[in-house]
Structures are given as C-alpha cells and as structure tokens.
Image 1 (tube, one colour):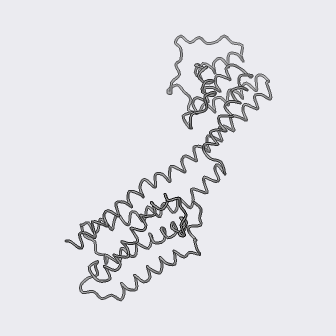
Image 2: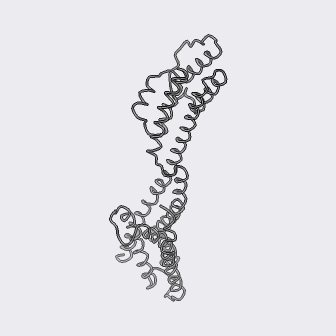
Amino acid sequence: MNRSFIHQDQFLYLKIALGLCLVSILLYAVDDPVGPPSGNSWLGYTLGTIGALIIVWLVWFGVRKRQYTGTRFSLTRWLSAHVYLGAALLVIGTLHCGFQFDNNIHTIAYILMVMTILSGMIGVYYYLTIPGLISANIGNANAQQLNATIDQIDRKALEIARQIDSFVHEMMAYSIQTTLNERRPANKKVVMDMLNFGETIKEASKACYCSLTKEEPIRVEQPVILSKKRAPKDPQLVLSAIIIDLSFNRSPGEKLQQLLDLINEKAACIQKLHLDRVYNSRLKIWLMFHVPLSLATLIALVIHIVSVFYY
C-alpha cells in the first residue's frame, strides 16, 4: 500500500469528512434542545443515523478488500474514504451523544468506537511507514527469493569449506543448521550435507587449534552432545573468527576470502529476512486488534440502536 490513499483525488475524502464535521458542529451550536444536549433530540437522531451508516460502511471495507473484481470505486479510493470518514466519526459520535456519558451500553459503544478509530490511526501510520521500510530492506525481492539465495550460498560455502579444511567444513555445516531456525527449511541437498556432521562447535574449534599449533588434541573424557545450551549464540561470528585465525596461520588465500564473503552475504540476507518478518508482523498484530475492535463496535452499535427504540 503506498501513500496515494492519503491524497487520493486531491484530498476529496478529507474535504468531505471536514464538511461533515463542520456541518455537525454548526448544527450542534445552533440547536436549542429542551434540557441538556443528548442523543434523544432531533439532532441526536440525525447525527446518530449518519454515524451508524458510516460505521457499517467502514466495516464493509473488510469485505471489499477481499473482492478481486474491479469496480468504479477502487480499493485505494475506498481506503482513503475509510480513513477520513473514520476520523470524522470522533466528532459526529461525540456530538450525537451531546457529551453525555453514563454507565450503560451507549457509553460502551462510544468507547469501542473511539478505540477502533484510534487503532485505525495507528494503522494509517503503519501503512505510511512500513511499506517504505520493507522496500528499503529487500527492494523488489521477497522472502522466498531471499531463502533461495541463502540456499545457494549454503551450497557454495559447504563446497569451499570442504576444500579448505574438514573442521571448517563441519563448522560451516553446523552454522547452516543453527540458522535454519531463523528462516524456512533449506532444500534437501543442504539438509543432507548438514546431517553428515555430528561434532559440536567446541570439538571443531579444538581440532582447528591443534592442527594449527601442532599440539596433541585435548582428550574429552565424555563426548560433547550437541544441544541448544552448549551452542554459541552466534555461530556465524564464531565461524568467521576461526576462519580469520586460519588465514593468519596458513595461506589457502582465495578460498578463505571466498568463504568469508559468502558468510557475510548470508548474514546480510538473514538480517533482511528478520527485518521483513518484523515489519510484516507489525501489520498482522495491528490487524489482530483493529478487526475485532471493529466487529465489537458494530455489535455494540446494534445493541445501542435496539435499546434506544425498544427500551
């Protein structure tokens, strides 16, 4: 969703909403009811009817979003009107009740309406900012393409690590295994490569150190079992550090640099996936609040109307 719904048709729906608010305020100012202002006067019924129709129309937006057939009233226009008329409800609804609030269903309906409108304003902020953040993060790509890129990086990194050192290869496989929890499962070839290695990061690092210093391997009386408690917080950083150590002690040269470049590229892709998930989660969480509030407001409105005319 882009910013076009804000200035759709040269702010036509903002002008309509402001016009409704101004007319409502003017009528409220000139009205001289018997007793204090309330929803039981002719003005109260008029504004209440307008407000009720707007609420029903606003809720219908959820149905319109799921209709894929074209209409003259485009989804962008509908959203623009949805935003501005929803904000106008704050004025129309408040003047409808004449600022009279008691412990009853009418006040509950008003509170639900206000909560829905405020949550809608948060949604407007999200729709104005999050699409830009998503675009800046992954450009024209999507999560599926990023996952495919990571799969390709994993395959290349495993092959290069195998050519450098068996222990580096094991650590590369372990790194791939741990990062699977941060994204969708990789393809079968990468998974099978990872399953061929069972040593932990600690055992692999000790073996790398011994191969460099020519020292005798440190014997481990009990085998180290791979577990989440023993696993490093960031295997990518551990792997990078050991490969850098290797580059200072021996000189496979180009292969080490290729592997480091792949690790950095993969880390960047995983970071993009994480941010993409965070941004989209914000919209989903917002909808989890806004949609139920909208339905609760509609139900409260029906009860409010029934209670007014029958009780």
